[in-house]
Amino acid sequence: MHWTDQPYVRHVDDGPEVFVVLDGAVDMHYRQDDRERIERLAHGRVCHADIGDEHVAHPAPEARSLVVERKDSV
Image 1 (tube, rainbow, N blue to C red):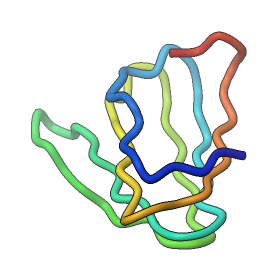
Image 2 (image 1 turned 120 degrees about the horizontal axis):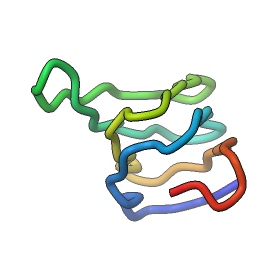
Image 3 (image 1 turned 120 degrees about the vertical axis):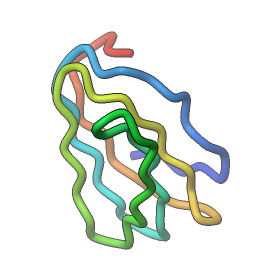
């Protein structure tokens, strides 16, 4: 579990990732069809990213989240 009030690092996934908002909210910035998109993830939302997905989470204004990914993932 991770608490933050700062954006994560933008990255391209090198393995599957599951991102769960446990408390607060997150603005998930991601690329789709060569366009930047933003989706608000509220308490309880689950986001799944696959290999090659580019994204960064911005707490709105702070959040507790659980990120499940392979060891030493980006």
